[in-house]
Image (cartoon, rainbow, N blue to C red; front, side, top):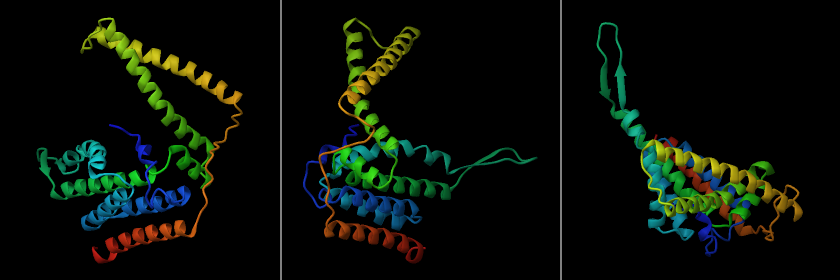
Length: 253
């Protein structure tokens, strides 16, 4: 699964032109509203709003579905665990039943989670990661957390590439992976080597950054300027979030 959502950051749309900090606030409110929805009809409307926002940001339905499907697979155990009812009694044997309410609850949780996942696409995929993280820093998020996310994201792909090269080297030496003791020993050696080299690489990267003037702060060339339209977009998205919650509590409840 390709998690590089910022590949769409070079496109042009009203979401792309939105001030990053205000965009984070707006979508943060929208995601909180989605998480607070209780009824299926309101969650479906929230899902529709998330899809429309993703489409407005240039994401196709195929791209969204190809990523969101993995979240659905992770939630599949809920359809087995939540409907399951086990009754224990003194003189009564164990009774295993199936609850319709639990099945409905699993569906509600799944829809809510997928609606939130779709909303993440326009939130994080419409600006380069360092710009979005600087927006979080401007909103008061501690710099330590911001830089932790930035470096984790950056070097996650570096270690993926390094792991791929190690697998190619093993294949060139005739290693055939399998489910046996020998294969697991090779896997353990490979993971251990990756951990050792990653520690050494982190030390070299830190030394290189300090030699270039790194002082613990993230600096970017972009200096966003907030305009009236940016505040208008925030008001619109906040109003949509409020309407979803009110509709869920009053009209659908």
